Every structure is written in structure tokens, then in C-alpha cells.
Length: 394
Picture 1 (cartoon, helix red, strand yellow):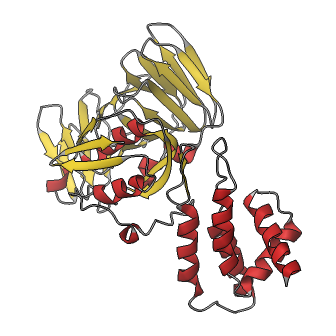
Picture 2 (cartoon, one colour):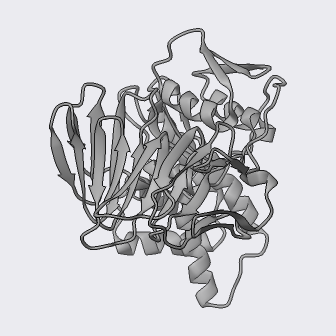
Picture 3 (spheres, helix red, strand yellow):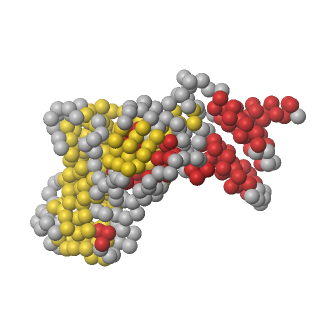
């Protein structure tokens, strides 16, 4: 029996470190498939205690381990009755490992297994619900405002020969051509869900809260020019000989057909352009600097116009907002609270500087108090909600 326990411990340690061979993983899967769950909890506890203050706890995908077990069972036509929810509670516990003293915290698992917040003793906190509507407004060329949330599906307006239609899924679509250049502005305020629009050229744009987009109702000439504030994700329709150019102040992003994210929030340190597909040219008119970036790269334009490139950017983190998630991977509390303030439309006051870094994956449908309670489980930060203000304490 002792030899078996030692072997199980070895397999778990190798899996946690990401060093297990295919044969060793299969051996571990087979052992787990027989219902031996209890040693996992002990291993998780040992995993945390074995790391000193200068190390980072490795992120272990326990949910993947169990899914492999289910796959093994499924191939035999056997389902481990009643064990799936039990395992998910273990996975949540593993994902909620708090490494106190190192500044690194794992709040949720990669597969969006959420912490059982209700089981954590916390002081009662006021609450603000997550946005459940799109409060965006389209300002037409004649100054008329179209409030999207109050409008039904179908025709919203006509600009020349261009029709503006709201689809049942909330998407806004421009269709038609127009010789006269007329500009519309789509404004999505703080505390609003993201809004999706299809421009007249077929390009798709997702606009985050606290953001705006100024664009022509139809594109003419040799270029497609639009202006942005805040953050947007673009899937640009390809039109040879008619580049698509996004402007923010003195910075321009020039493309033909591609997928990219642009973060231009003024309260961030730099403007960031992150490329998922194709290629884009990022240029600053003040410094005359320009860079062509490739998929997986990010160009950061500082306030003084200097451009820096970063390779191997985590694209899932950059585009998490578009997919309805808060995703933080080693971010400081100031960055997190800037995102929180835009999404929930709240003011944030810091009483003390907090140096810790946080890891979390949380759906944006989560209420404000639930999100803050999850962050509080790190013991590195505390919050109070007073009306529309969040007070951050250490």
C-alpha cells in the first residue's frame, strides 16, 4: 500500500509540474478513473505549502485531468454517476489556491470554474448589478440621436440611401451606398454591455463600454477612415486598393483586411494595438515612427508617440472583454479597477497603494459585490461600496 501511495504522489507531482510523460498521464488517468479522489486534495495542499515566497505556484489544469477521465469512461459507455459535481468542487478548490506572501493569486480555473463565493465568510456588501442592456446611442449626421435600447428590431434610420437596421440579436447593420459623405457616431457609455456593428463595407466592430466610434455611413474614395475612443475589436472586410484606417489622435492603424484589438483609453499608460490575423501598420504622426506588426504581436504607443513592440501576447486576455469575461493574468489592482469602473460605471478611490498581482477569470455577468469578494479572498485587498463609489483598502 505504501508503494502505491508513493507512486500516486509521484504521478500527481509530475502532472502538476507539467513533466508527466504520456504513459505516466495515462497511468494517473486510470488510477483516478477508479474513484480515488481523496489524495488530490492532500496533494493540492502540499503543492501550495511546498513553494517558498520567491516562487510562483504553477497553474495546473485539474479540470482537464477529470475531462480525460470522463473521455476514458465514455469510450467504455460508463458514466461516473454523482462524481462530476464532486470533482468540480475539488477543481474549484484547486483553482482557488491563494499563495499568500508572493503576490500571485489564482482565483478561478482556466475552464471558468467559479469559486464557491457563498461559502466564504465576508462582511455584507452593497451591490451593483452587471450591465444587462446595451445603452449605446447613434448620433446621425443631422444630430438626431437613436437610443438603441429603446428601439425595437428593424429599421432604425435612413441616411441618404443607406439603411440602418437593428437585428434580433442586437447587432447594428449599415447597408447601401451613398455618394455624399455623412458621418455617424456610435457612443457606448460606461455601465453598458458591448455593442456590435457591421459597417457599410462589411467590416465588423465590437465596441466596449466607455468607447465611441465615428464612421461614414458609406465608404467612398481610396480610403476607409474612422475615429475611435476607448476600446474596440475589428474584423475588417478586405477591399484591395481601399485601406481601412483607424485614427486616435496622432496615431493611425492602417490595414486592408484583418482582425485586431485597439485599446485607446486615455487613463491607460499607452495606446495598444494587438493583432490576431493579417498585418497592420501602426504610425504616429508626431514622431513619424511606424511599425508593421504580425499576428500575436502588440504595438504600444506611449503618450509621447514612441512605439514599442511585444511578442507572444496573450490574445485571450486582450479580447476577453469581447467574449464576456474579466481575465486578469498578473495584473495590478489599479488596472483591474479601471476595467471595473468602466463596466459597472462606478468611481474608485484608493486609500493605500497595493503592490500584489492578481490572476482571475470571471464572467462579466457577475455582480460587483461577487467580483470584489472573490478578489478579497486573496487577503491582499479589501473593498467597501458606498453608493456609486468603491473604496479600495489593503
